[in-house]
Image 1 (cartoon, rainbow, N blue to C red):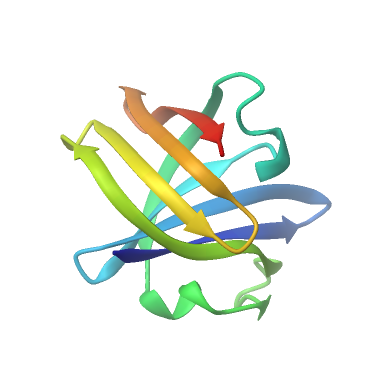
Image 2 (cartoon, one colour):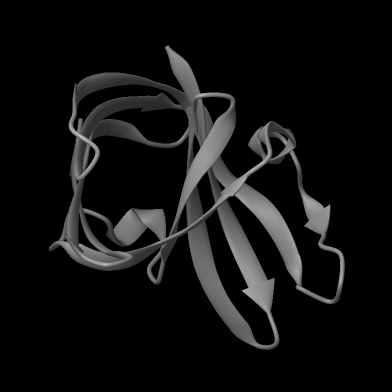
Length: 118
């Protein structure tokens, strides 16, 4: 199993959540506009952004260069059920979130996130 973290990222009166999945020594990262408690009500369009360093699995606090601050909203481990590069189906087993997460590339950096909680 690999690690995951969901961080609440606040910056200049804006808030989003960064979903980070440990993969190949880095954290594949998606910027999600709604909090994890809202995942599953309907699919969410999110944006795949740059990979982050593994330190962010546990980091909370201010970010350099005035990029705001992050706080861990949920963390744990995940198991890959299916992965094709443009589609991820995972089982999350976290401290505050458990269930099946699907990420499907739509176009460019736009992805659709679907979640079914346990």
